[in-house]
Every structure is written in structure tokens, then in C-alpha cells.
Image 1 (cartoon, rainbow, N blue to C red):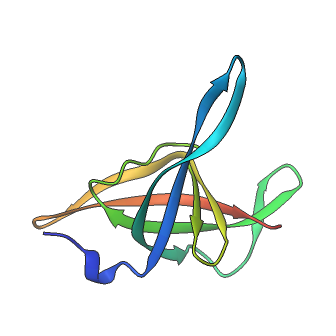
Image 2: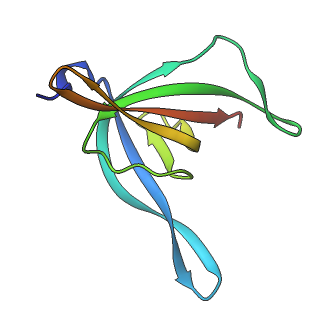
Length: 106
């Protein structure tokens, strides 16, 4: 069983890959439907001097996400999957992922 009727945002998934030598670049892996939800209403300090918001994303269990992946929704917002942010969950016969991401201010 899938949760596709609850997924409200189309999100592009980009991953860092080696281009040549020591150079890395993001390349689009796929596009998936997901549900994006803020964890709180306010911004907080993510790392030294950088403020942003944290979000929780729910997606299908077959979605391939890794730490450091960059996600972009249709509105142009960018999110980054945090360390240990991907958790596989099961509810009855439904497999899904809970992904913690952060969005930095532009």
C-alpha cells in the first residue's frame, strides 16, 4: 500500500557526485511526491551564524534519500537532508520514510 494520496509536494532530489578529480557537483537523481511539514514556527541557529528552519518530510518507503542530498520543491525552496535524518517507518502494511531536513535563509 502507498501513501500517494497524502503527498502534496513534488520535490526534486539532487545528490553530490564526482565530476572530475576532486570536483563535486549536484546532479538531479529523481523527482518524488512528498509531504513537507515544519517542525516549529520559528527559525533557529543551525550552525555558527547560520539561521534556518527545520522540516520533517514524509515520503514513500522506496524513495532513495541519503544524508547531504539537496531537495528542491516547486516553489524554489531548498532543503538539505541532515545527518541521521532518514528513518524508515511502518504503519500496518504501509512503509514510509520520515526525513529531517533544514532550510537555510537566502
